[in-house]
Length: 520
Image (cartoon, rainbow, N blue to C red; front, side):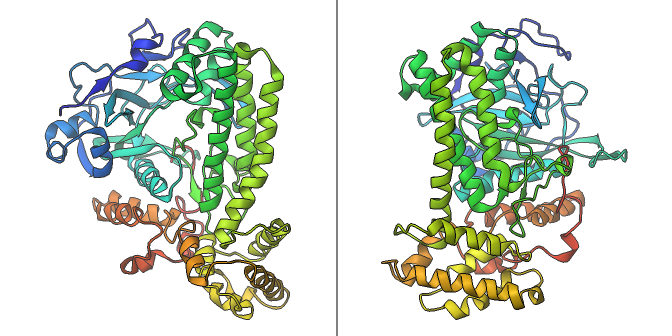
């Protein structure tokens, strides 16, 4: 493989002087050098050829033993020195101190076609930041991460990417639901790709330790390489930097709300400084539209990271980042103004996003009330979010009385849509029909536009679980079928119509389909 390596992170940031791979507190350093663990019998299961092209990896490279070995951590390419990053974080609202890359190892940086990428292995062994864990990953979590990061990209959601999914050939002990029932599972390694894996917690750790020198070095590095358009580092540039991180974070979360994605564990160590979706753990997709739903069993009591609370958590996390950057700015007012702007921008962008899902382009004063009424109606009985909005595009001006029939496939228990619930829906469709009369575009043009923001196919939790179940038996075909399906989530794909369906009853309470743990 003839790759164009860069070493900006390791050459421009302070490293941990201790080279021993032992768990410890790492001070005044942004990373520690560490090599991946050798695995028993690595086997490549799937590769994103599109991502390989982005990195400058040729089609012939993909079929080599060297490719398998490099992207499972069994072979280091010349002039590369793998490393794990140091960061802290607030977990479920509480400061957790040093966390860091506990099961992720960055192999190298690549520049190709004027874009820079960091290549990282998840599940490649322990690091100084592994705490009590083994640094490994299992096949089920790796399939979920691999499929979802690429699916999110094709949905138009800002995200980190994935290059490859491989078996390590080792068995890994896991207690999937933290209930004392540990079992051995297939070990796996995902190659994750991003311009940077820096997180809010990367900055918090130095502020918490009052290591303002390293904090400034890292912020200046981030601006130089990822926000260079803001200018040379200064107090004003730091304020602009925080403003842009705030804007990107909000845009990312608005996209999550648009497609019904629930991250599940929005700790500050899982928040990308670039506004990318990162760390696909106990995530899930809304089946029934429910602001209160979270897929994370660890969060089942307080539901901090529930679907409807994601925008608020984004703001809370930005407050923590503001506190971390304060020592470089020493002025609270501009930071507070940016946080206030997040609140007002959320209101306007959220309404605009919902209008796009409804096919509304003209401005009307009471659109927010129409949206509120819809969100209320969607929660009267279990209503599939993806199917509802996709089928709503079939609604034409004058269809007010046909509305319920147009979306009937979205209801999980159709006989619940009777009497008062049916009347509430008829009232809403009447209002929607009246509102569409004020739109200037044709029904056909509106449908085309709605189908570009309302996906037909998303990675429903049970779909990923079916692929996992097959993979556990040694059949990896469904991984590729879903991978190809989700590359065109807005297209009709009539040959794949079976995936445009409500969650089956068997999946309602099945582990992996309705509930997941952080070890997932």
